[in-house]
Length: 635
Image (tube, rainbow, N blue to C red; front, side):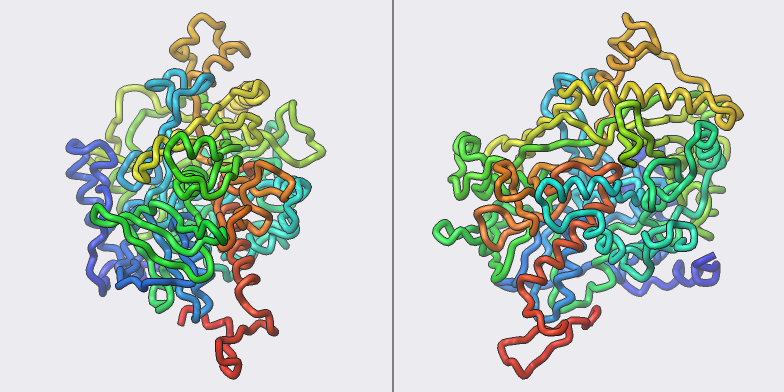
């Protein structure tokens, strides 16, 4: 085991820094008072473990400078990486601004990855009423969780490390985005990666020594392996989906280290918290980017404080890394976006850029429920808790069967392209909440349910984002527009049929897999199992997915809807970049966290290319005799 018991005990006993972690309690994330005793005790034990609590690694607030070389807006999956990489240059002052607080200790436990949805570290966005999706939800609105916390959605996600397919990036390049082909972005995936199972993955596609730990979870429920066997029965190999080929089944590698979450904050910021040139400002909302209207250059930001507004200046660049919802919002609040819309909300137009907030898209899914031969008892109890507390093993060290994924081609995809259009997720055996902690505690009197969840990887439906008003604290108006392109519903129906076929394999029949045939509300008039029924069901009980992308798309100069160029610089405004998932012209084929980290790595290098004098790996200060090595590490 990587982390033997003696070391674990030492980690438990030797917290040398004050523990003042904010954030929602585990009991509150489970449902409050009925969970207070067991979940409260469990949280006390978890917070006493220093490798989880990490009080000495947390960022500390220090007095702000009036100006910085770089200001990064948004401390999420991309912003944390950029702040880390830019602050490698000792002479650059870097400020990272995050609207949320630091990550709570409970988020470090993989099995509790769903607990914090809807909590104070979640923006908890909702779309405007949909016409073709989420029809059974209140007001037909889809729920979009997004991380409002240092580390962003990498603190809330299922940790799956999926890069997408080769064709994703080659398509980006073919659209005129020079430098973004698969062979050109692969080095940036490798730069971050510290793969702890390098002998189990495809040679040449992975690396060790990076800041981001990548590995399978320590524990795999037996059903995980049965799902892999079921895929083999249907002709699909178990393979590294980030390697040579992209179709198959896999117990995915994830961003975890010894059974605890590795967010981008933990990976890229905490090791360098003592850098004197890196400051992190938490719990701070940006009201706008400051732009010189005559030179069209960004020169700082305005933020909200104590009911007023204050400014901080940037001498080199402002980098926006708010994600697919917040980045277009910040741009429009700053007067950059579709001129007509900006006038509607009384924002002075600084630069008319029609693509801001457009091209918004997301994967879309459906939960196919199965009953299995098992009582519906809570996977979390004192036995699984002690296994985790002492050894970082067992059900708490993973996400249940959510660790499994698969990529397949529907009949609408060309197998020759190795560009699958369906991904599968799975749900069950998640050790996240319990009332008593007793082994065998029943959640209810029914049998255990398992979910097989197909997701459309290449949606053709496109939505958009607008401002509600000119108040930076107002949530923007999100129009997801799922299933407004008819091809998307056709693909999800095929995906549902395959999920049912998977449930009929011998490997899963051994667990008593039975399709739950309870009709979806509103679809009772359709014959259960028909294409028309599944189409109705997918539109009523939509799985909105959490892979939002494209709302500040990257494109060549002749693309009138492009917001940034292939160097991620905003068209028409100098010293301003957007670096996050919003720049994806088309969303990648899979979970978007790993691609977002890659984008941040590549974007950071582009910034260095602009501002460092290339002289055999060195740069010069104002005094040419002072040659400064760029490899100062964490200094």
